[in-house]
Image (cartoon, rainbow, N blue to C red):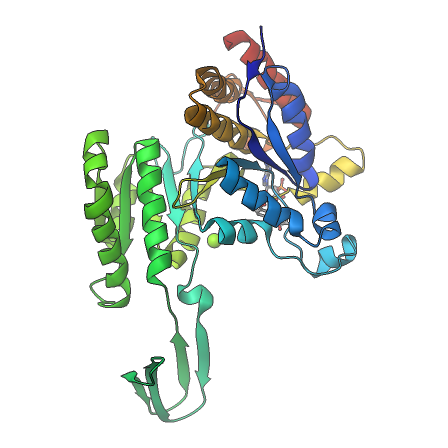
Length: 402
Ligand code: NAP
Ligand code: MG
């Protein structure tokens, strides 16, 4: 078979620990034999980030703006322990945070569904994709521990000195206070990323806030979404046969539990933090969760939702066999290759991405899987494979269906 050619490169961001090991195996076994891979390579491994004073992360994000599509391996976000382990010059920021700030994107997380790994919620038949607004609210709040009796007010001072004041509460004793904000620009970007991704994946979009209680704050989210939908997306949604559905957050939660899935759920920052963990654990495994950062301009960065799987890496370093699930990382590659194929009208590349995904699913459904899935599957007598063994099994399935 002739190798598939790629006219335009995609941005490749390498990473850390166990996922860096998987990254190389995936390229060697599942990509290089079939594709003349054309990537702009950036090494986001912590050592090179440190060496370049984290410039490599910024360069990789800029390159994503230039080429439109990126695939990223999981990376270490340094903490105190990592400072020592890697003798870092500084506690570099989370690469995902840096990239997201540069692309101004929204993260969409979706589970990979296979027969034999059933979600805890019986009626969830299709993926539920969660979009979390990753700016502001309680994550950028100011707080006060009120020590005693007194008056709390909310004050906004404009540049010309005029003020808007609201009484928060007349405290008769000790208590607590919180002030938070969001920005119309950020909410607009979030809305556009959500509408664009719904169109891209042909799925309905749900959005929910508590606008009945929060008549200015949450209501602004509701209004901005509705206005952008009406002015920019309503027609395209109709043509695509998909819907934008707004409801109250508690109603949304109740409906989600009874729904079949197959839609995108846009969440405010806190709702997304909480609900994405609930949805991913109900779907079975963090190792089967994909993640894509979508910018309002339509740049895409694909990755696995999980981290670098540090515990497995230390086993690997000791020469012990590991059984780390590579499915979400493989799907990060297929997501990026498919998107590259769509943008370049490269059908061979699109079909290859589809088949590689199919090969992963079929391998698991045939009973061959890594340990994390073997522990939770309803398939009788599954074969537990090593990290490498699983990737080789996918290669065998792939060769059969190509
Ligand atoms: P993690 O890497 O997601 O792993 C946590 C645990 O989940 C693992 O120890 C393992 O459980 C299980 N797990 C996750 N992915 C798996 C897979 N593919 N196959 C099998 N089991 C899997 O999270 P962490 O240990 O909290 O974080 C490690 C590093 O990753 C940190 O330095 C963190 O900064 C970074 N991180 C990066 C990203 C990113 O780049 N997007 C996201 C999150 C975390 P068992 O040990 O029980 O087998
Ligand atoms: Mg969370």
